[in-house]
Image (cartoon, rainbow, N blue to C red; front, side, top):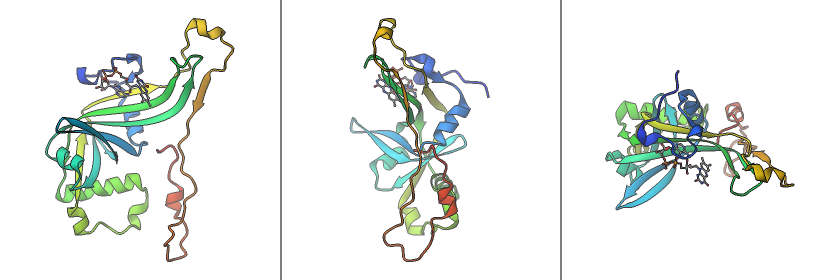
Length: 218
Ligand SMILES: Cc1cc2nc3c(=O)[nH]c(=O)nc-3n(C[C@H](O)[C@H](O)[C@H](O)COP(=O)(O)OP(=O)(O)OC[C@H]3O[C@@H](n4cnc5c(N)ncnc54)[C@H](O)[C@@H]3O)c2cc1C
């Protein structure tokens, strides 16, 4: 797939060389990150709310309570901005000014569509499969009451930007003579050892599908 050119609203102005039009790289980020931050403006006050999300082809699925300001406002058609970020390292330059981070960061602009009926059920299933791979075969399905209490929204992947920072420290020439260490400290994202629920009533082992959850998610 050829990289696409950013539209004016999604053109990175600062350090534009870090912008990527690579849709496959965007998908990898969106399929790895577990949390997105979603913006909504209420009476002129912006709120940025972290939520779990899943990419489903050319759209992102989010879900939340019917009582949530974020979900009510977005379901009414408000414009939003969703970001997903993975930090891959801390860049330690000779100066604090040039120190930075390795990251992959996506921003998606647009309006959500509320999903209903079968489309809602399918999207929720997809969200579960993505966030808890393998769990759908064992987890209790959502009840009618739980479904009614939940809003499921889809945000199209039409207007997006991807920014990737992965270079070595970019120190000023004068600073290279400073006798201090410089480099990159990688950040790794991995799951730890699962912890049993304290109210577990049966002697059941951690399922293999849980142990198989891929590292790199965060
Ligand atoms: C983990 C992390 C730490 C950062 N720390 C700093 C910091 O301390 N100081 C700092 O100035 N910047 C930091 N940045 C970069 C910051 O996110 C912005 O990219 C930058 O501040 C603004 O760039 P701009 O003026 O080109 O963007 P704007 O003019 O604000 O945005 C124009 C368009 O560019 C795109 N865009 C801008 N930033 C991003 C992004 N990060 N990811 C995807 N699309 C983007 C969007 O589509 C946006 O609509 C950090 C980024 C990450 C991911």
